[in-house]
Image (cartoon, rainbow, N blue to C red; front, top):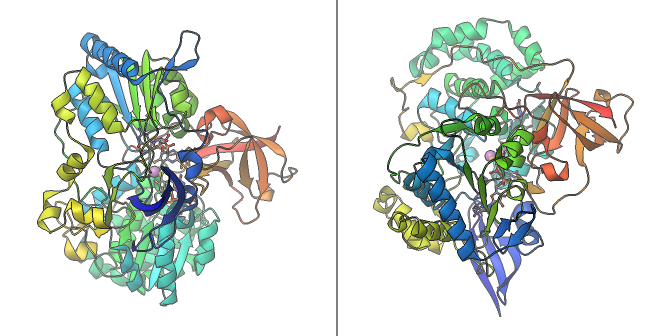
Length: 638
Ligand SMILES: Nc1nc2c(c(=O)[nH]1)N[C@H]1C(S)=C(S)[C@@H](COP(=O)(O)OP(=O)(O)OC[C@H]3O[C@@H](n4cnc5c(=O)[nH]c(N)nc54)[C@H](O)[C@@H]3O)O[C@H]1N2
Ligand SMILES: Nc1nc2c(c(=O)[nH]1)N[C@H]1C(S)=C(S)[C@@H](COP(=O)(O)OP(=O)(O)OC[C@H]3O[C@@H](n4cnc5c(=O)[nH]c(N)nc54)[C@H](O)[C@@H]3O)O[C@H]1N2
Ligand SMILES: [Mo]
């Protein structure tokens, strides 16, 4: 018998789509996007449309695995696995304290029930956790500093824009459900401009395209701000603090100098100024741009452009970086106290190695593949491989799972029972299993509850998935008339989400004014030995390290032909950084800048495709992010 069942995608993606699955005899046979969902609009991205390769493919884990004395994994039963985990964690906590256990929780699932896992570890210890945010830390810090609140105008408000600046953003790959909105806006006469050092697919649906130097956006913003201040100074004074210091910063170089620094023409900067003055003009800030040593400074500069041009509080304007995906949910499940210690996420490998009194003895990894995805992959690998007890809860044998003592197989996005918000729009959804997980697979909640039962913490995490969903739906959302049953019936827009952010909500800074930045961020690092900047960016073929088809053979490195004189398309090359190198297939693309080398994000170390093996752990200027994209490399023949 064939049935159609709906769920919400829980991946780390701005779109949080509603998926319609066709199920036959307990197997999912087809996946599609829900045509009724206002954002999903009936289509799925490549990686989710093709998820069945992972759902029932050979990568899928269906039994707990325990490392044996000979170094190999052997399948074991759940009772044995959980007894061992409870015994080891209990023993380490009792003898060395909770600080000796690190719980690393990343973005494999954005379901809100993930908080219950954190709650368990808070009661077990509290234990050591990460601090900082490799994904959006720099931009989050920027928006919090400037506005005291981080949220966006409704996506459909873009239909009110006269101009849209896609600033360092590639929605065609990283969040394709923005594209229908952009297309509709263009049909209504909106002009869309892309500002991105990398030429990519999204450029094809824009009216104009600027290709600044990577990290040159700060200089470009200063050039634009000069023109805006000349026109809108009085308005800026009303809305913003620090106007004098900000103007002095903008005037510290000439227009020509800023443009040279950004590697754009003066005409291009003037055209952007014109668009911001000819509002409403929306700035959509990509997440990628913040992953630089000046990333937070760049986002602050873009915030300033929106504010001083008068676009911040108006329909069709705004400077959107993030939608408050957790706003409809309870996020303060109280543990018994703060973490005894935090480790910086961008530097996690070294921080684990350096931790003392107590050292990190055990690591529990939830929904993350830190070996492949954190900077300095080999150090992360070495740090984890040298711990006494590493447990990875995942549904495939990732680079990180490969070095664990114990691997616990868990559910996929098609088996999730959870509640989800989105960071690219304001709609909420529930994830309901469209099929039962295979025998031998347990959800994160089941795993943590079974562990809690062995460690005397049953009560702390008790409750079915649905009970937790009820508990986690925010009382204010209920007060606004939205229930869990409503979410189960179909997508619901978060009733608390603003349509035009600062027209409805006051700025949350101490003076209720925009805090303009007053200092220059650090310069982009340059090393003449490694002249190409490595950008390892999202690809439609994978979600971080979760590839549709696990790739084999060398990765492809893309560069401008003149960046590698004498080297030919398709030849094998060595991509070298100051810390490591990898072999790749050369692809020449004359549309790219001459100072860039592009690798896909998400390659695994064990496949020889991991960009993070080359990337030194460096912090962003604020927010404790990872400056993934400020790594110099060079390319040599093999
Ligand atoms: N298919 C797919 N989709 C994904 C993901 C994936 O791995 N695969 N990952 C998900 C995750 S984890 C996240 S956080 C989101 C967002 O994922 P991101 O990959 O951060 O996506 P974008 O926000 O589009 O930002 C990337 C863009 O920033 C640009 N950029 C980099 N440096 C600069 C710079 O100095 N200046 C300017 N102007 N631009 C710059 C890059 O060229 C790129 O086009 O997407 C999610 N969606
Ligand atoms: N070089 C480079 N590195 C980057 C980036 C980059 O652009 N370039 N981007 C960075 C960004 S933006 C991010 S957000 C991070 C992402 O880094 P990670 O969050 O580590 O990304 P994934 O590789 O997707 O790992 C998530 C894991 O969770 C598993 N998983 C899926 N569902 C579940 C579940 O329900 N339960 C459990 N327990 N596990 C589950 C998946 O199988 C997967 O192995 O990577 C960062 N790393
Ligand atoms: Mo991310």
